[in-house]
Amino acid sequence: MSVSDGRESYEGAPQLPDELRALGRALDARHGGGGEAGGSESMVERVLAQILAEQTPVPVQEAGPSGIRARLRTVRRWMRMRRRALVAALCGLLTVLVLTPPVRAAVFDWFGFGGVEVRYDPSAVPSAGAEVPGCGRSVTLAQARERAGFEPLVPDALGVPDAVTVTGEPQGRFLVSLCWREDGHTVRVDEYPARLDPGFVKTVREPPEWLSLGGTASPDGVQDPALWFARPHLLSFWLVDADGDRHTREERTAGPTLLWTHAVGGVPGGDLTFRLEGMGSKGRAVEIAKSLDRDE
Amino acid sequence: MKTREGGRIVDEAAVIARVRAGEPEAYAELVRAHTGIALRAAAALGAGADAEDVVQQAFVKAYGALGRFRDGAAFRPWLLSIVANETRNTVRTAARQRTLADREAAFAEAEPLIPESADPAVATLETERRAALLSALEQLSEEHRLVVTYRYLLDMDEPDTAQALGWPRGTVKSRLNRALKKLGRLLPDFRPREGGDERE
Image (tube, rainbow over all chains, first blue to last red):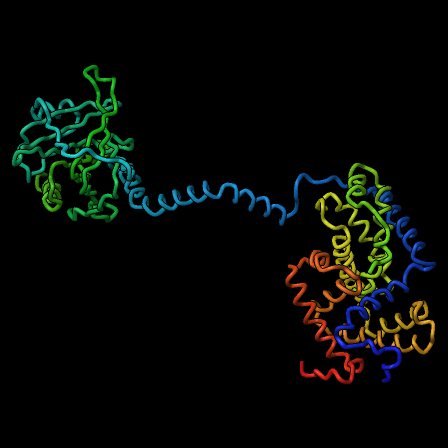
């Protein structure tokens, strides 16, 4: 094919853009019938006629950018503006997710049978050198039983308590405390009927340890669980004054504590919750808890 | 290079504002300014005899969608992407994808209208050349054919091409390069004899 005459400027690919543009213009020649302007005018008429005939609504500018992409833009802008807050919130969320499962389980379980709520708070700093409070003026076990409305159980391993007190709690319930003096410090057991609303709130900096007392299996087959708080923690509890109805929330630092429940035949609702404080050895604390069975 | 439509000075933003303000007649100015290129796009994308219907539908749809038109954007690439959509739909539903032969026939028919080919010999040559170009275009991949069509047949700059195709600028550039190289290889007859880079 002879392409040389009058076509010397062809240099292959470099010439292609102009050729392609010419090809595009050649396409125009096929349309418009009586010329370009006429084509445009007839198109104007056709389009406007259709718009009016179909009563196409007047396009109203949508507020701000629209469509999915625009919405993404908006979200991205929002994220940019709030990145620091978002990061902080997500970190907080992750902290909660990472750290709370065992504690949440504890809260749930103790709500179910113990009346003790465990809260996680890394900033809760217990004061140093706190001592286990004594029981104060003692009553006899029989008096305690009368006042509290349930038979206080005494762990066999600790022997006869040196002191027994009964403390009023909200909603007419009572807490029985047993105290012993051991090697110059106090060992204390608080016991009360297990119920849903927590009488104690333990605020801990690290999750407590789940233990199994391994004694009698509960009806659902779970070995008696217990919670061991190895570290001192903040303990909140109710106090009822002499009138019996006004109470305040008190807070103190509690040392190593074992929490568990024990089924008691004579108590409506079945269980007593025990908290043993002042026993530094986990093994000994578990022994004391188990000794309730021997006591029965 | 100025296209015929490009010669018309239309303050698109002002016109669009008038249309949105409830003056449909103002839309006539946009239709007038872009009918030429819209028809060319429909033809280049294969609308064939349906090109005018396709463009009419595209203008009506564009009118209805004008509320979503982003202020400050270029109207033409936006319109042409609607035209491309309409063309695809029409071609698909009618199952009338133009065959290569149809297009060549259409071009041969149109040839006498091209002013610079008054000489019948030159006209024949151009017809042959264009048939070869079209044939080469047909052999390109869809993406390559599209980018060549928008950038050259519709004579849009790279930003507008990118907007009409919805591709990043860099993608337009690189695909355009590869498409041109392929076209060059597909047009051996028109290569200068001394430029033997067949293996490219």
